[in-house]
Image (cartoon, rainbow, N blue to C red):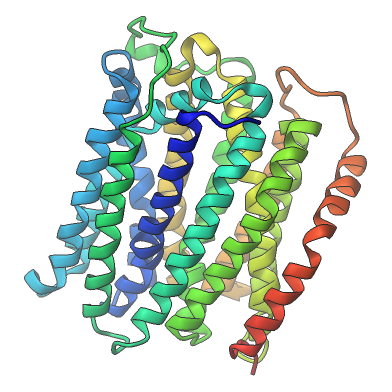
Length: 436
């Protein structure tokens, strides 16, 4: 597709956001661990973005009816970035900084999630439907490249400081915050297309799920619960249980991101060709394999972290692009912001409760497995099981009906082109010390 000025602004915003995120949120769990956080606290910290989502979606959709979407993104985006100053300052102000950091991180995410309906509907109106998979894939590529750069530099930077010191984190977070502010300013230059839905919606409309949106929301609840049940604990398992150093942790994050980058463009084209639903199912099942692989990783088999991160990158590239586009296609164009907010509100309940329960279970319960491995096993079951619910959804404007076998075979054929790059990643990772 030919890129216009708006598309280039969105891509530039995504690249800068990736730098910002890679130097801040990507290392927040490591920051909390350095300050002495427990698994339960890590779970609570992981829940903050989704608690914020629950609190903000109705308000966020209402804002779209009264203000320009780019203004919503700029004003609230700036406010969100500035709360990182409080996160940076917390260890120097409070003797027990963990709870203040959790509160400040909640405020960061309140600013961010208030923009979700405005952002999603802006993308839907700016990018033609027939090229949306390809464009979102291209944006993921930009995000991946710059994200790799940020997380790799971040890991190497933190290695210069004592592991329990907040100083390296503070400097890195401050630099990331400046980049985040620039990303928001650039988004303000977008020329906003007309918004179709200015009709005020009653409160009860936000709680009225119907048709395919109801089925899709049920899928989203189960999948997102399974995803976030384990998500915050991968970093804990790598850093604490396996004893991996910060520099190697940054490399592992970069490997996953690079795998996502390499596969994102291909994933976008596959999704545009074969439809959103069945390709989303492939991605969802792939994400379920990630915690399963982690179950067999020990300090003696650290090299398995590399294929695990590669599987994660490819699976999430497919899942994120397909699931996002399927939601936009299911939402009615006349009520798009409201219905996206409605879906996001309900699924955020699962996203908020899952990491808290995961933290409690990992600290207190034994069912054959115990600790984080038990959490990984439950996450595997929930993630893969949600694909059954996804299969029941009728996709609007479905492409020609292809069998799952046909799509999988052709997807694997398309991915063959990145095998050489993946083999290089594995060799680099092993050479950097990820084997014992």
